[in-house]
Image (cartoon, rainbow, N blue to C red; front, side):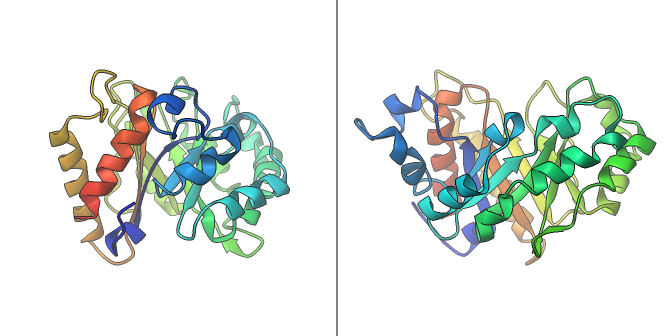
Length: 255
C-alpha cells in the first residue's frame, strides 16, 4: 500500500471487513476468515466499524483488533444506536456512557472518530440536539475523543446547526449520496466523508475522473493547515466495489 506524508493525515477505507462478495474480488482465494482484518488493514488505512452500532463489544475484542492491525491504521466506530435512535436525545446519557465505557480505549492510537448516526427521519431540534451534544465526553481513559455527527434529515441544513456542532467540538459527515443532505464544514479541522455512489458495473466503483476529483479535494483540504485531517470511506452503493475504489483513491493520494 502506498504511503507518504500526506497519507498520515488522510485515512481511506471501507465499512467493516466481513463481507462475502469481497472473498471473490478483494481477499486472496483461500484466505481464512480469521485473517481478513489482518489483510484488509494492510491494503487500506482505516475501517469504519458498523457492528458497534448494533451490538456492544468487549474490551478484549477492541484489544484484538488493535493487535491485528499495523501502526498508523485507524478504526472509526459507529456509536451504539440506543444513543441516537430515540425521540428525546437529551435522555441518551446512560447509552452514551455505556458505549464510550465499553472498552474502546483498548484501541489506543488506533481509535479514530466516533460516529453518531441519526435516523433519516430525525429532525433538527436545536434545544434537544444541544442537550445531546453536551452528553458527549471529551475523552476516555485520558484519550481525547473526536465526535462525528451523521445527520440525515434536510432540516439539519438549518443555519443554526453547524455553529451548534462546532461549539461542542463536533464535525459532520459529508456525503455524495442523493438520499441525504451534503453538509460541508470548512471551519472544522476534521473532514469525514462517506462516498456512497459506487457503481456495480465499474471495477473501481467510481469513474477515474471522480476519483481524481476527490483526491484533489483531499489534498486541498490538507493544504489549509497542518491541523487538518480527513477520513474518506467508500461505503454503501455497490459495496462489492468498495475496496477497489478505496485502493484507487489511496493510489492517487500517494502521487
